[in-house]
Length: 605
Image 1: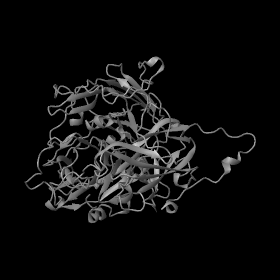
Image 2: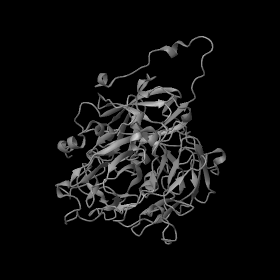
Image 3: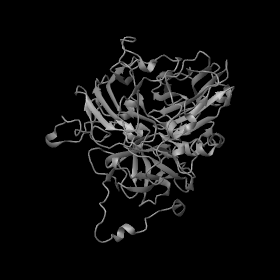
Image 4: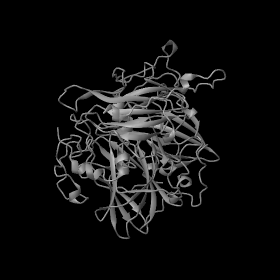
């Protein structure tokens, strides 16, 4: 086992917010069929100019979208997956306002080009063993699909955001998703992707993802009012050149940016060959040469960059370099929630950082200033230490940033004179006393106890329950909570690789990291739990406060590691949020007045 490079970790966590964020922590996207008639899921070549996905905007309070989900086998044996709208745009960005109605009709045109339909089949039997109703079948195969609207507080029900039973089969009529964006949904960046258990990694790795924007971030933070905005969806995929040696020529980045042992084995320490290639708005940046994509911007122009890490397993640690120097990045929103909506934050709050860690599934929105005229910068992702059992995420370039007076105007610009958001109607989450504290932990089953990369089963377990891989067949929740309450969860990592905790339907607040109280009032829906090094006296942990007060979240939904390989192999659990108790009209219930239990990390460790 390689030891952790402490100097690199210190550099990586050089600012308070990066520590907390990391540990939570018209173009090719709208290619039309006539441009590339032979491809179901066309993609641009390496080195292309990055353009924003097609915008589909609501009109008169309604956004109606027709999407077709397709697959396409490549020459190397891999499979691409894509969403295409009725105009041929691939993975369009859905733009809605709070209160808008979304009507999304999804057609499943999957073909199973690799003939894997018999593998890893899960199903929930309905009466008589029939599976005709997509709302109740629960049939989960390589040609099944559904949609998850990641980060949104909408009901976990069929036609909204149920992923436990809703399953649309190839050849079914278009399936209609229909729901309203809550009036109190924070304005920011969300996303959509399939969530069929056992096959989510394959679909997302193949490109099945798209952005959702709830409009109005300029209403929350006036600093971004009037700025042009860019949407960047960063995805990962299987290596195009898996057997290639590291590049021998001078790389596009300064040589000191690269690791001293560029040909090292894939150990999860961030050195050597990456576990996956990455792309930015489908422009690939493949190993070993990492030919960067191209981002064009006007000299000195300030823009709001909305970055979604839609990777299946890859962590990002983003920097913007001009003349080899990291540039300030003005973070304004995390996981769809503006930072300044937290209690005590000024109305024009911006947190200026030089690098931002984004786990799989997470999002960040930040201000970037273009380089001076005639200069070229770089958007890069730095190394991430995911642990001895983790996947490898090394240093690499994503895109060159070219300053030019002729750079095209971004297709979207925020309102210059917005009305302020209405004040929140609920008490700030951090000031609410939790009704209980629960303990959960990540763990893995290794084929070889001496090989941390040999995991074959992955678990997220409630303390006191038996570690078991998730099965959608049982229908039995691991946790039962009440709508209207707030809970604290302590989540440990008992494995030798980094895990990214995510829960559907709600946001939470990070309270403690590694047993140390943090002063971070921001909300998120994904947080990293550091890996166990086998030496510490206590397992790494985080403590989070979860908000079950919204009535939209009543029902069954899931929590899981957002490394999708781990999720598919069992690292997921089910929670049932029951309706709030009716108010007592007779005698006062003494039990309701009992002091809530609030376990402390300091007592445990």
